Image (cartoon, rainbow, N blue to C red; front, side):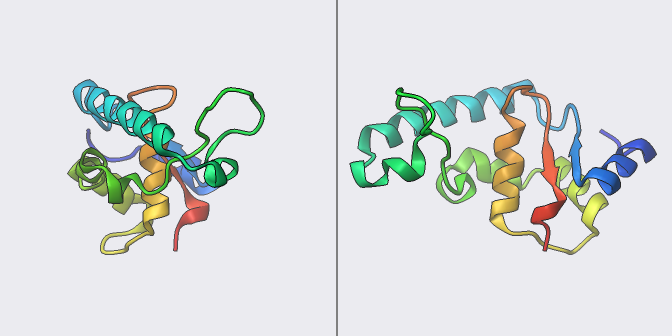
Amino acid sequence: MTGLTAEQRTIWNNTGHLTVPGVFSDADMGEAEADLVRWSEGFLATLAPENEAWFLEQSTQQRVLRKLDNPVFHRPVFRFLAKSRKLLSLVEALIGPGRSCGLDYLQKTLTTALVPDRQRISADASNQP
């Protein structure tokens, strides 16, 4: 991967969102997806009833998670992806070198990377500091 095109930068500047194909390998995404499934299953198995309104999708009768908080804190595979030189170089190309962003920004970025296209990464400018 060799940086961003002028078209990609324009999309980012106009919309605050960018999808970049091929940031992570199929193997990395497969490992992250499998870990996300394990984490989801374990989380659902131990979710206290008083927390269901916060974590479960309310528009269905099934027990479907609507969120899992802070995978970078809780899951080594997501920490590995967040530290990827490929990802960091793309983020720096958009927000500048040496700047940082909150973990909620990286969480959204990495979680979005898994759905629906396993070869994409997304970022939302509205979450930037």
